Image (cartoon, rainbow, N blue to C red):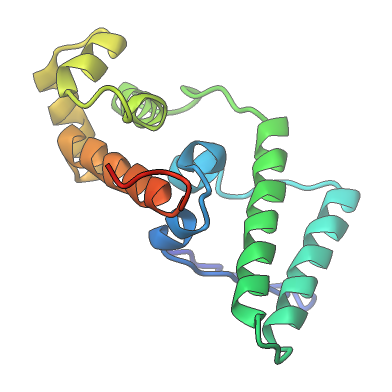
Length: 177
């Protein structure tokens, strides 16, 4: 995601956290819990003063632990980031935005498709299943998802299946098969 701020106030300050998709899989965070990373309802989340203070404190704590030498620093930082993601997910959950407001139908259907993939990819892997759930043809689904996201529905399904497999492989209690 690329962002640009054209005007910054004198009191502007930012802390940024970057991580890979593998970070989510490695830390057993199911993608369905962090939907705001996949299909955000908004890119700017208005916060109350209390929410802002809480998030700022979490980021400051993360920053402090990142710069503190410790034999388990990497694990500590990963867990703080995971906690921060859950905190942010909770804020998004409190502010549901109607899916279709101000968006073209192709974007709405594409977003609905991606939500369905998050929910059903462990058991449903055919484009026809998702097209049926959206009440459109598989060909139409393929065209609109490719147009909106640059990837085919099959690509999205395969990506979700691989991510789920990575998450499951992290659990030593489960057999490999």
